[in-house]
Image 1 (cartoon, rainbow, N blue to C red):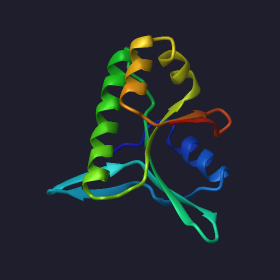
Image 2: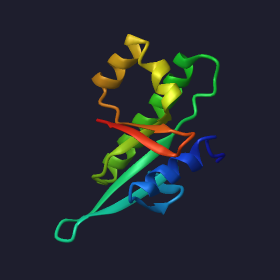
Image 3: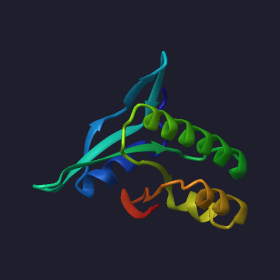
Image 4: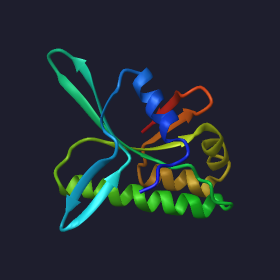
Length: 137
């Protein structure tokens, strides 16, 4: 599957914050269907607590319509979140988007309400600097 245009910037931003990329992409097989989540990452929390693991689905939102791009990204995110849950993988998944995309989304109350209502985790990245701006849970 083709990588999103901001894939490498998101990966670099994660690495800058101490995340180790453990799979790029992460393959998950469920009921004979093979899924491909963009990134699996982990980092040491504290020596006694072990590792924290996360999954990242990256979306560029390159379509003209922000609503349609959100609709597609939202569906894929929920699908992957459910698959991880079905496989008893207890780690959060984040939808990684660029700061300009987030700024467009937050101007649309309907989309912000869906994000809150369905508890989407967002990873907002300044792609010009390969820097994480915010983790939204």
